[in-house]
Amino acid sequence: MSAKFVHRSVSGRGLAGAAAGLFLVLSAPAVACDLLVETPQAVRIEYNPFAVGASTGPLDITFQNRSESACELRLRLVDDIGDPRPVIDLGGVVVEFRPREASGLFRRDLEPGVFLLSVAGNETVRAEIDAAVVHNAVVEAGDHAADLRLAIEGPGGEPAAPTVPLHVILRSSPRAQVNIAGSAGAFGSGSSVEVVDFGLAATGVTRRVFVQVRANAESTLTVKSQHHGVMRHLEMGEAGTVVAYELELDGQPVDLSETWQRLVDPPRTLEGVSLPMDFTLGPVTGQMSGRYEDLLTIDISPN
View (cartoon, helix red, strand yellow):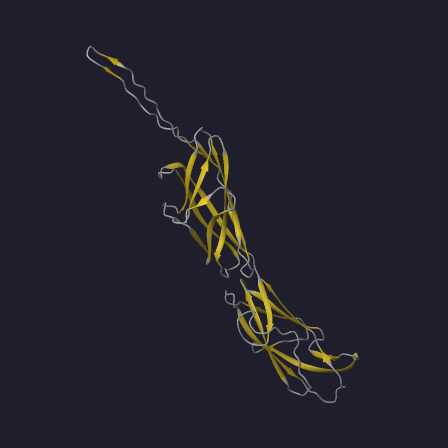
């Protein structure tokens, strides 16, 4: 789509009279730029709320100047009624637009959402902008979209081309994470636990850890016992005696005779939720001396 601006030149002729001559001089205005602007593809941001570092999506717009004179442009991000819209909110995630380094596009710090671009006569320039996440949130899994427009103006604010529609999509893929900690708290807080040590075995001895969970969708927590709810003698294996134990997660008994699953739907925060996991030794009555172990696998997957 292009916007053309033309002018009509005016010439004056000398008028001869009996008493005097009159000579008119006009300065014709510079030819306005003839601008063709390509409508860009939708901006797509692949977003992981638990990743370190900013998520971005590219916005590339091509400007073709088909006139001899340069086009000095002001590019403004606006909403449907023309009000400034320097940032957008996508499900709680705030996105700001920034010129890409070495793109030839300049941002006016005093006017958020305004960029300056110069397009020489008979030249084609690509404005390169990044839509960057500046405020993170654990947004619900799925697509979150917003529409805005790019107003293209001359130095005095006059329209230089029709406004360009922009469609921005933030795609939050389903994600879930689990961590085992020695104390309750936010996800990742406290020391991680890899071994639950009962010490010297005795009937009814208990231990507690915490299963920390965070996710952006309802998820399935899975618990699997290698030896189906008993600890086996390390040296004797299946030929030795066993020590049984019971397990509860957040007060709910866990059946370790088979793979056990539970739906969890933690709050959409970086802290997530902390669930107590309690171990209780069964009867200890005459088992072989030595070390006993079982391996628990705790996994989580978004639905």
